[in-house]
Amino acid sequence: MTWLITGGAGYIGSHVVKAMTEGGERVVVVDDLSTGNPARVPEGIVLEQGTVLDREFLDRVLREHQVEGIVHLAGKKQVGESVEKPLFYYHENVTGLRTILDAAVSAGVKSFLFSSSASVYGMPDVDLVTEDTECLPLSPYGETKLVGEWMVRAVGKAHGLSTACLRYFNVAGAAAPELADTGVFNLVPMVFERLDAGESPRIFGDDYPTPDGTCIRDYIHVEDLADAHLVAAFKLADWSEAGEPRDLTVNIGRGEGVSVTEMVGLINEITEHTTEPLVTPRRPGDPARVVAAADRIQSELGWKARHDVRDMIESAWAGWVSRRGATV
Image 1 (cartoon, rainbow, N blue to C red):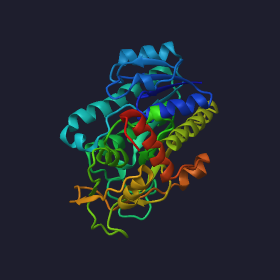
Image 2: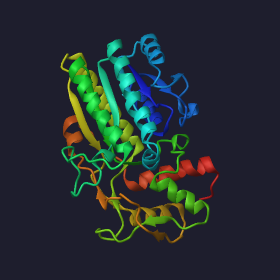
Image 3: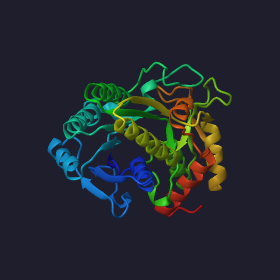
Image 4: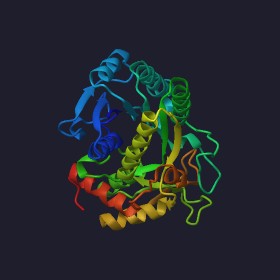
């Protein structure tokens, strides 16, 4: 079976490409390279440079490569930027998704896997966030992901596609140094950057109603996340082959919370730094605790995360050292 992976030259996308090719699937990558790096795409894998907003381009790629399934990861994902540029985010994430879904239906694609996000939940006041927790996104980015889920399910139901929406929690780590995250938008690389500069890592607020006063999050290793895509893709293909299209929506997390203070302490330990963190005011909209209920994906797909937080930090640091020339 041939899968088209949009955004396959990006951080998460390149890991999905790796997992699916190692799982025996044929893969074609589409990426506009606005944030992706062609060096991430393995030798022998076709990279079609273009945007999912270009219908003619998509029609050609789907036809020439006889694509049977799509994994859609391409899109913009910075929460703060989405607040400043909501129209841009709706155009890129919603119009882009509508365009590729339209092309998929016309091409007879029967399996569609959508990269969603835990941001669809907003600030849930629950111990564990289940897939049935009310979705109240706080940013245009989160809204585009929720609208995207609605669109994917509706198109699947109307046109007989098997669909899946995977809601990622906090992604970290790397399967190999060359695939490490090059952005500095998430906690782990943000702390790395401060340590490299000889500055104190920042903790945004220490007065939350948590044991140590700092926010608690669920972290997932990107290699586990990629493996979840592979397992979900297999399930979609099985449903499509059986002529029984279905929809699946699942959280991708470990079901374990780690506080910001704990993460910074572990990063200091692994990188052999002793820099004390600097506590700064809370960021608007940061919930105290967001931890996934991870039992549905285990029962539906037999999947469970294998890597712990130490694995994430160690592998991410190896990538950081390799890329930045940092000294451990």
